[in-house]
Length: 290
Image 1 (spheres, rainbow, N blue to C red):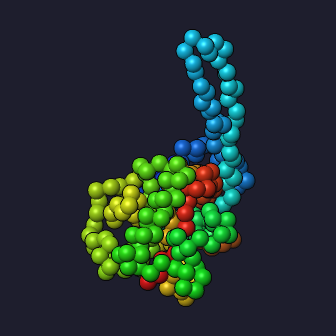
Image 2: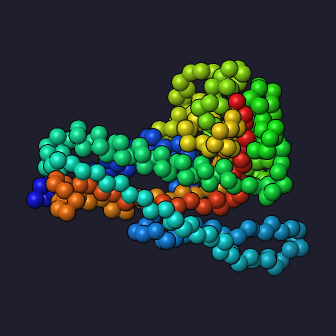
Image 3: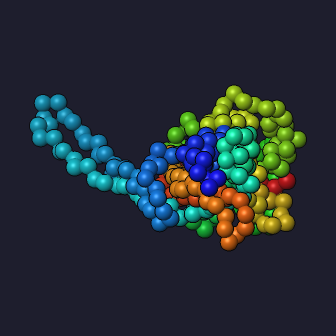
């Protein structure tokens, strides 16, 4: 059988090498807890401890220290997504002898897998309401007229409001980021907020920032959701990786000989992933309009 020459580990490694270079949202998450993921429904334990109490000490007076017992404040991330790809090749042996063919197929699969994960993450964050229904206007809302128009004054005001909220909730200043859509990026260019240039000075796992504004490294993604299908309103996400954990694993990669489905060989891969917002104040949703 021609599938005997297929080496899944090699192509799985190649795909996992491609993914970090094309992702945006997933690269900005905390990914320290990726481990043994084998099926949808698996849980990843995010190890945390409870807060530490600070007590008063008086020289020559305090003799018996209050020794605090550490408490477990761990959270669990559920692997809720199981997504697959599958494509047909004339001959897997031929793909082995002509690596460029297989590399192109794996690159395309990796890009589409990236889009699938980033779209899901950005839609989840766009639906997340840290203000718990208070409908704060500080960062804009999706109600008619509630969005932030892209002018230099209003956008920078929104950024300063996001920074104020993050400051008030002790979100570290180092590592803050903002994700916007390409349309909003171009409006920010036209408004003179950012320059239309390739800024490659700040890169996270291959993700390029278009600039730092009010302490937020700003990234562009086609997968940022709109507030409405035909709306000029675009969600934007202010965040910090400290507060959102993402775990992903390529569960299986294999090839098989087509029989009932037709002639030739096929390759399939299973991608497992999940996300948890562990510190809600780290993720802020805004609405900008073109």
